Image (cartoon, rainbow, N blue to C red; front, side, top):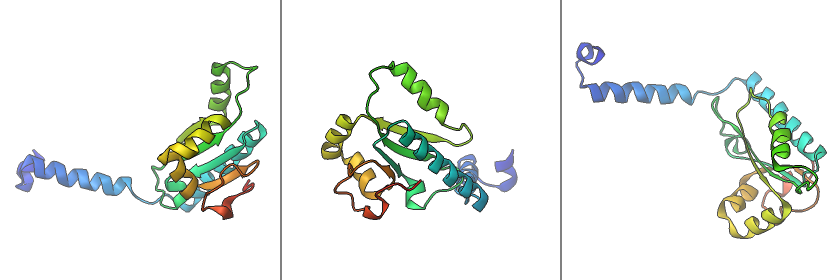
Length: 154
């Protein structure tokens, strides 16, 4: 057994190996991969705009510049509900937009849900304050300190 060869207790060896795994996990991604992901982010923002989105905000580590090779793409999207389509149909269309090569988390709200959450939900307020607005049909994200990001970044 490895712990006997090293002369450490099993828990110590597991702790060392675990910390090494964490270090490997947090390695930087390559510049090429980062560029690919930025292209994908812009593509998603454009596609949501084409589908009638009113607001698309990138948030999380990719917006804050602290991403690593395991970071996903976090997007908050505000879109009106298409009453002519089933909910399953809308989810299928959105799901088809996402490239499976890039881990992507989407938070999709109707304008009404967004207005309520913007005033009452600390998480949504934080996304607006710290996120990067990729597309905005009109000034929905008022009160955001990220004024430089308003408008279309696609």
